[in-house]
Length: 144
Image (cartoon, rainbow, N blue to C red; front, side, top):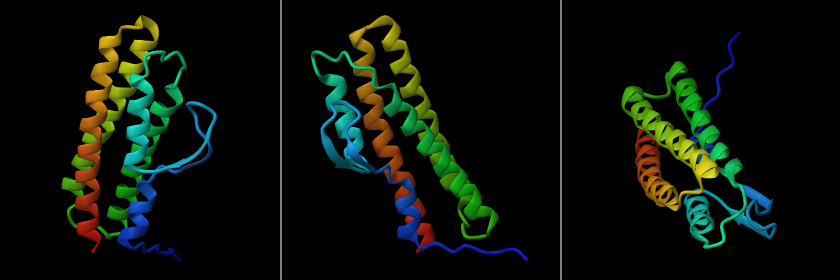
């Protein structure tokens, strides 16, 4: 007997939210941030003039979250909950590739300390935000 799981659009959207409760990875201060706020916090941390902390963990978390989102889309499609799977999964694959690029650029920055790489990462974060929002809008529209 196969059990079925049915999720509402808002429950699916909450799977995409990266919540951080407790201690901030950047400065040790208590905080709460989710969704688009994480990207703004990350940009602020990158643009600090004395950026000396290694924040690789944040980039790994963003990439891993996008892998999980793609797995969630595969699950929804295999349980016949998505009709426009190809379109949405293409958007999510694009988001996944951008997050991988961003993570790799940061790794390159760690070794070179070239500030121009940080500027590229900030631009990549902006692109990632826009593409992720587009993906979520398509998914929510599909699940309504």
